[in-house]
Length: 545
Image (cartoon, rainbow, N blue to C red; front, side, top):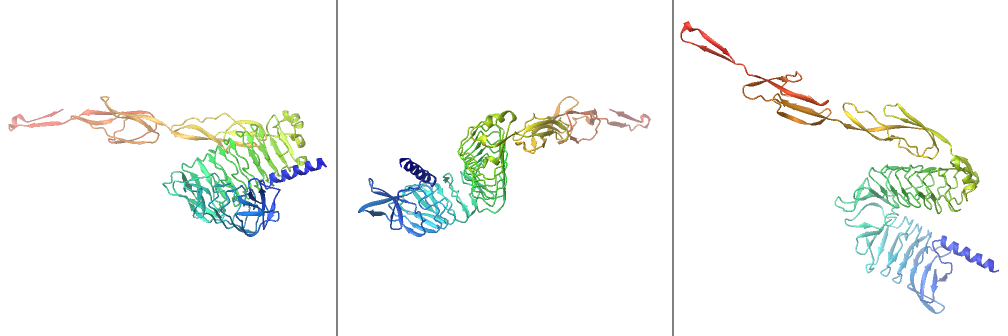
């Protein structure tokens, strides 16, 4: 009997934790359930096992067994998934509203926070797509509502944007954002900011920080099925694309370094994505609920796969884990029920628990590992339950820009191939620096050819123009192809003859094609003096100089 009681208590506690902390001991008073605390004479509104519906009015106090309790708190998940709940009247006695309190209340259209509320959780109105306004009693000392949006009292920080508020939202100048402030912008079609906003900028309706190195939020209601993250973006902030189910593809740039948590959560239309090699941090729950995603490869610079990174990706069939990923934690791939191939390039098996691949049928899923590590995986906890095979190998061809083959290499599946930077000889017009490979080098999934690309840098040449007495008219470095016009002006008693290269134009045009010196050559002026005499016998005299 004692053993059964212990098991029952354990199960109840487990269910409580999974259901966002809903308290199992509750008392129904009127139409509302409470947890009562006789020691403090306070009551917490808790979940109705049959769901709340319609319009609910929470009293400021309740009486039970002749004792009066002040209703001070709305508990975590109290109205969770009450899809028929339209409105809730909250009394001034409520000081705290805990996390997930109105989670998935899909019919809730508006709510007013009382003056007494001084603590709310950021997940308060998670997945409430009909909520058009979050109103606040004007006497509340901590919060205020501006045009239905929840701010801090000073109006300097946006706390939460209501999920059902439609249209384009213009951020006021001189405000900052709570993390995840726009996580629920279901009906928003775009952002707008003034050019003088010191903190934020907008491009094509998408919100960025001022210098556009961080992408903050892509509006859920924005029209379009594809999006390319602009060059220069290094960080994608939490919740940036959450619930953007219309997006089928998102192209990530090679400048990207950090992908925070929950970025693509519930992007149910996303079919594929390539994580750039430069990404070194990947947060938790990044791809949770991406039910159309079929494959994913995690690049070399990531060292850990966090909890729920691909949780509930029900159509995910193939995963590549590159060789620097030494840690996989939490529920990384739970409920990936279609998973059939895992390419784990790590030589030493990661230590994992049964939660990592919870609900994955390991008996029909093939785990490919380095050939020298097969025995290690066959004895490693959890990994040993998969069908284990050695990683296949593929041929990589490296070509120069002119199509000539530089090299061949053989690489195991999931490894990221590398090659020394090739060179391209300079020509008269340019020198060349290696710019990278096309396509971008990524984890190997088959035979691949990479072609070198180069940046052309115009060559500079020294041009000197001088007179025959060595005085310099012009002397400088000019890029190939520059057009110069020069004029040689003779002194008195001299005239221009030619340039040292035989050209006789003056002024002349010089097109820069290499280092060169041009010298202007001059000759003395020649003139004729004719003298005539009145005496015919003396005739005339002609003198030339």
